Image (cartoon, rainbow, N blue to C red; front, top):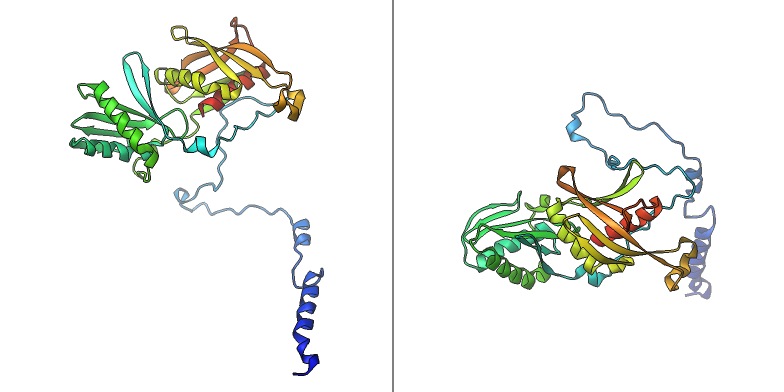
Length: 316
């Protein structure tokens, strides 16, 4: 082959590369199209359409708060802290009780716990008389096993009722779930409606910040107490005292100095204050949490929001 022909492939390749990098070369520049884009009228469907077959692709839910920021000093609440992968994957089954009632809290969604309840009945050699995944109830020879959504997202409450010896049934169930919840692989499609999100909502009504918990007071109180005792310190807080008869928790909370900025993480000037959480039954079988001063007096709106935001982060 002639020497000139040997260099032809290299010359052609170099020419293509240079032309591709040029503005008018191989790659089409779409910047002008975005700059000149115009807003057009939305597509409308005929009135004769079947409305049940259509819905908004990205619906915006109705607001549950009447709060509107009207001053320039309003600060957006901090986002929830990201849990480590180890914390997110940790498996636990814990006992809760209120008065004579006792149940289990499992850090697995109800659709994952439901198959384990069926497995427990089978392992105990108990007959299954009826299974209602919609209500999360399993009627067995051991009694009624039930599961429903817990307060924290991805958690469940499990009960053993009508067994003749609820304590023994619940102890056996706790051992079984503890041995199996970490190895959970499948979920029940039929039990998926049992799970629900937005169990803890922070909102402002008539200028007052409050938390709404999607549990009745009897279920919410022991869970709130447990989380404040064991996990509130992660949010710079501590449980000092509680009084179930008056529906009050006394807490210490260390607020971050907003002016210290990034260096706050390295020991900025923080102030620890004592607050009172007032817990009461609300409508729709929910529980309401408000914050007040140690003496029951009003708290600055910004401080109230920060304290309740920390409590909400503990419960989620």
